[in-house]
Image 1 (cartoon, rainbow, N blue to C red):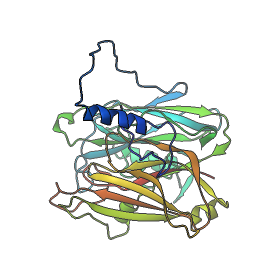
Image 2 (cartoon, rainbow, N blue to C red; image 1 turned 90 degrees about the vertical axis):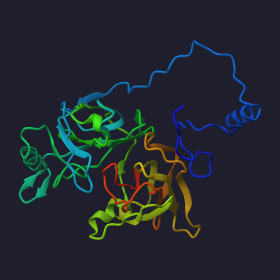
Image 3 (cartoon, helix red, strand yellow; image 1 turned 90 degrees about the horizontal axis):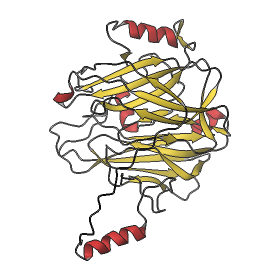
Image 4 (cartoon, helix red, strand yellow; image 1 turned 30 degrees about the vertical axis):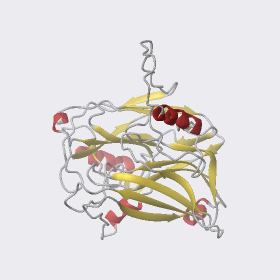
Length: 361
């Protein structure tokens, strides 16, 4: 069965649609092993189950593209390319579910899709669309534009509601919630291509994003992708992880008061989390401190990280955070195979310590 990375025994959050084994199931397997793992009767009537696809919605596809490594410390084997798609919406809608279908899984490291207001004034007398067109014109012989980061230098996005990484299937937001997409918004799809394997050089990709919309929802949410390790890249003094260590940790925290003041609300609900690291990750944990003197409480814990099985995990009941609340994230890495320090970055051979959040006022 596909792995379910978060601890889900009630000690650190409780998540819906869990694939975690119950204690009875674990005991059954343990007893079978203790009894000598006796082989049962062979069967030839079993079939591989069909992976669920998103029903309903609209599909948007990127052009056929041949990525090329950008090189450098943070993209030695990687290319980050953005593509502009017009969803041609007739009215404001709410995104309630999505599914990303990578055309060439051997190339695609991750996919982000984000609405962009083309008419938004981003300064200097330019709109988002002006900036995108200028970026696109820099490489007229290739589709899209380089976008190391999010949507490209100078492009301001309305949020990042669609995040895909290996292992993820259909993502359905909790019932009654959604992310607003305005009628005139354009869709920017960022694809991170990784070419560390020589056999994928020269191959192409055309990936698709399927989005299901609703005319209204009970509660409008938004997505954040905070990463305190990655943020040090922009501090002038980037953090790094020493090489040759079986376990090296990085911890960052985030105060919630700024969100409460920005939204002019008394509390904010965390409906889901998206833990993300790269190939050197071992463990990742998030704790929540409500500022009430009770101390930090475990909210999400991955004890055995697997880059190939990444999911958005939605809580059975949201975590309500009020004034004075904070989130702390600790990532644990194994750098034994490295000869040089491990730097933060989006490249496969850099690292991240990201905890995506679905927040609902």
